[in-house]
Amino acid sequence: MTQQKPSDDAHMLSYEETTFIGLLKTDKWEPLKNWSILLAFILALWIVIFTILHGDFQRDIVSFSDKITSTLLGASAGIFGIVIAALTLTLTLFHQKLLPAMLKQKLLQQYLFPFWFAVVLWAINITVCIFLMFFHALEQKCLIAPVFIFELFIFLYATFYTVRLTGLVIQLALQRAQIDS
Image (cartoon, rainbow, N blue to C red; front, side, top):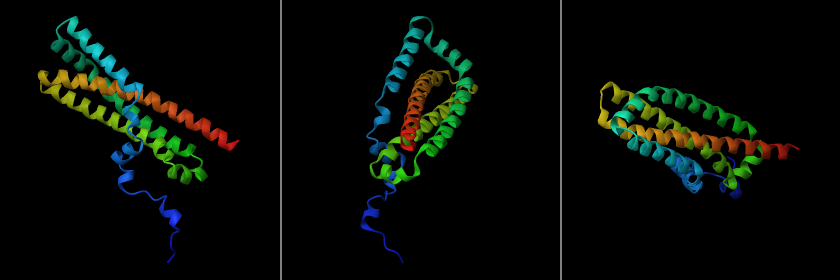
C-alpha cells in the first residue's frame, strides 16, 4: 500500500468543491457579475416598455410568444450543443502539465465553471420554451406573458454570456500558444 505525500492532499478537491454551487462559490459569483446580465435586463425591459406603450401588452406578448417560442427552443438546443462542444475544445487546449498547478491555484475551476453556467442557462431556456409551448396549447394566456418575458431575459442573458465565453476560449488559446512557444 502506497502512502500519499502530504503535499498531494493539498491538491485533492472535496465533493462540495466540484458541485455547481461549490464552483460558483470558488469563482466568487463572477459569472453573475458581468455586462451580459445588465444588457439582457435592459433589452428585455425595453421590449416590455415598448409593448406596453404601443399596444395591448397581454395580447401582443402572447402573439409574439406564439410566433417565436419554437424558434427560441431550436436556437437554445443548438447553442446548448455548441457550448458542450466548446467545452471539449477548451479541455484539449489545456497544457496537460499545467493542470495540477492550475487546479491548485483554482484557475482550472475559473476556466471550466463558465461552461457549466452557460449550459445551465441554455437548459433553462429549453425548459422554459417547452413550458411556453405547453401554455400555448392549453391557451393559458395569463401565464404566457410573465413566462415569456422571463424567457426573453434568460435567452438574451445566455446569448451574451455565450459571447463572453467565446472570449474565454480565445484567451485560453492565446495563453496556450505562449506556453508552446
